[in-house]
Amino acid sequence: MKIRRRDFIRTAGGLALATVARALPVLPGPQVQPGEKKFRIAIFYEPSFPPADGMAVGRQTLQDALQDFDSEFLGVEELTKRLSTTHFDLFLNPYGSTFPKEAFDRIS
Image (cartoon, rainbow, N blue to C red; front, top):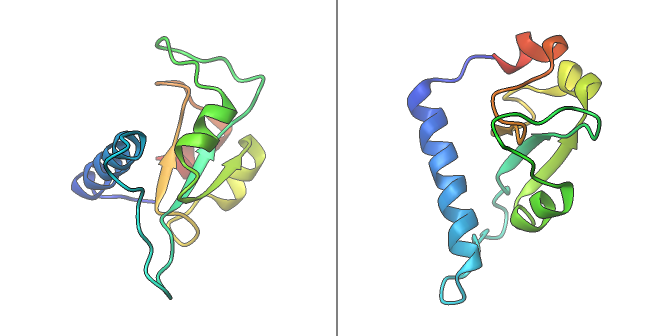
């Protein structure tokens, strides 16, 4: 799976802005027009996986922040099988710079 850096930064920046904007009462969440697909996000989540870089975001926090998106939590095995641009628009790793070695080929 190859993603151009510019596309990744634009997507990640949009997601970060949407997450922050959603918390502000004067700005509505992302609006999806009829027939339009929601943004698809693959979230790596494995309860036993060690966080790094001071990152420790809980599953409920992620669910709350991404409730307006079509998001799916994937464990290590699911990442190795399903992570692709065909299924998802963005990959979110809440563990900082650490990632599962088994899924490196899919993530990179």
